[in-house]
Image 1: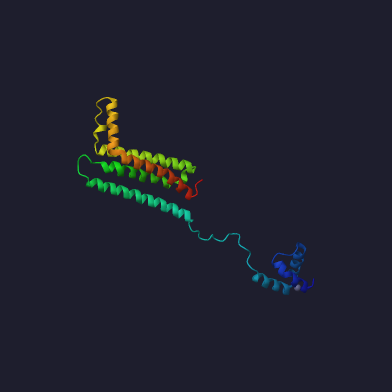
Image 2: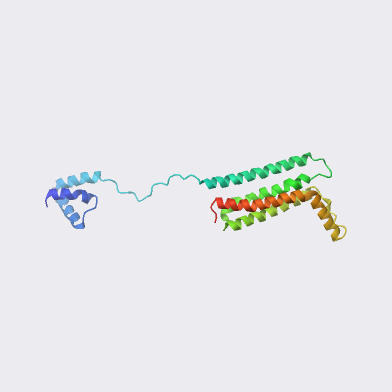
Length: 212
Ligand SMILES: [Zn+2]
């Protein structure tokens, strides 16, 4: 075999690009010819490294804008409800003992507390099967925590309507109605507003983080 032919074939052989027959011929020649073997070794040393199978590390991904917006929405609502609670507590502290005692707790603190506690549910949004299941649970949780906050206010301020059940049922209902109109109307309106917001905004939040 002519060394020149082998020299022509060697780059292909090194790159493993020649046919099996050619490769066999080159291999046989290299076993016999020290000059070509030397050339082969030089070429092999300079041959580019085979491409790695491992993929390049992924570029560092920034959080999508909508995830930032979702986190911002949650933070703003947390701050807002906490501000309402603080405001209600300080107004309550200023109101003189007597008729109006507990009024700010009913108007502001109980609804805002119910809403703020229901925001805890937002941390578990990924556990819910669907966006619908999530906003319904958020709504139910807001209603439940608001009712619990009202119970606390009623016990704390010792409203007598709930602790002296004498008289007929219609008497009790009449007094309950009077109590709601006199003390709770604004609180009930705010609670209804916050429950609606809880449903609407939790749905929006789940949509932002890509929940179907
Ligand atoms: Zn040779």
